[in-house]
Image 1 (cartoon, rainbow, N blue to C red):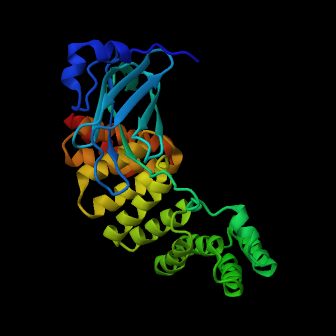
Image 2: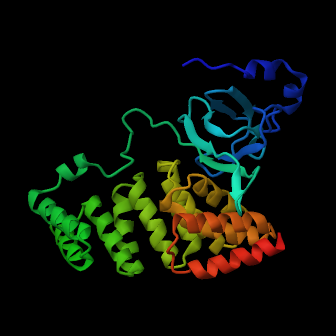
Image 3: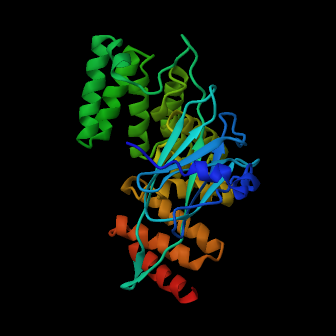
Length: 337
């Protein structure tokens, strides 16, 4: 598929020369929308002077170098699907995120242009070195190495879990681990079942053991982060969820839970970035991101944006337990806007 390389025009223009290193693209695609974000190195530092490309089918490609603060911005974008591509050099894996900008939104039946920014938080991953690769997930091959007796107990535990019987699932998973202690998949699933039964401390214990066995695996790191969050150990949860994001930077759930942990630490600006990254997917899995994001916008006195996020939350979860309270809050926010 060929694209119009609009970046050539940007490179030749004096405006582009002035924008180099600012992180802000001097051109757009003729609309009113914005895609912006932050790029982080594996160490957690913000990545400066990294090339960020914005690709779309109809409008071609734009490019900018991230600022000294790791930020990038593409202004004046029309609705449509875009790919943000980051190539930070030979030491890091290529990162790519997809953003869909919807057409004008409707409020009370009236179509109005929305210029809401779409925010990404991108964590670069180091390229694995030869013969030092570690599994990023707990896969079937790892389970295949488990003794048959332990594997059968594990599979029986999974069957009970799928059927909603967490008590029996826990019994079988514990038996599987007793038979074969170095069983990360069983330890991870046991942690999940403990979370479902409100036993976050036991979940954290099981998931910590799973992470020790598979330190780079996404799922146990995510679940341990959630367990720590349930225990209100916000700083530890932040660290664990950032590790999960390094394993799967595109996971909206990891960004959402990290945002919630940052709220617990009163780091609202950082929390906003993570929650926006999750909310941009408009996935039911991360509906709560809109709820918490609405709270942040409300605290910032951005009443219109707060109401928009809460309305999106209700569209995704119309029968939420707090739905009536949220509807009343939306009315109050609209009256202030």
